[in-house]
Amino acid sequence: MGPYMVTRSSSALIPFKNVFSEAKVFDFIVDVPDIFILNTASIILESKQVINKIYIKYEIMSIDIKVDIQDEQEGEHTEKEKYPVTGKLTVYCTDHAFSYINWVYV
Image (cartoon, rainbow, N blue to C red; front, side, top):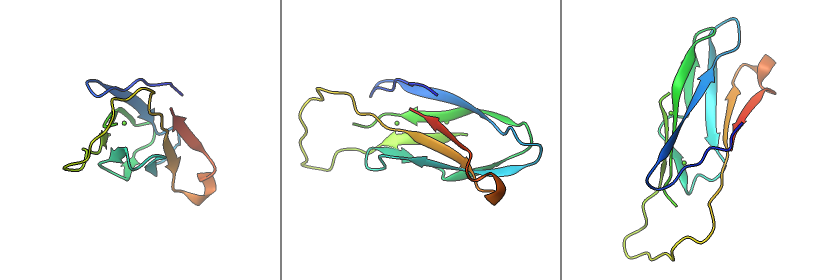
C-alpha cells in the first residue's frame, strides 16, 4: 500500500483493520529503525476492529503506532537532504497459522 508521503513538517495517518474472525496480536516493524522509530511494537485488535491511526512521523516515519524520526546527535551535522529517505512499515499477525500474511506500507 502507499506510497505515503511524510516530511519533517507533516505526518501520515494509515488505517489498519483486523480482517480475521477473532482477536489477534499484530506486530509492527520499520525497515530503517535508525530513522523511523515506533512507539509500540504490537497491539491486540478484536475481530474486524479498525484503527485509524498508524501514525508515521519523519525524522531524516498511527494505533496509535507513532513512528518518529530520531533527532540529530548533539554536535552532529548533516547536509541538507537532497534525496528522499524511504522506508517500509510492515504489519504482521503473530498467530503462527497466519504469520505468512503481511501488510506492507511504503
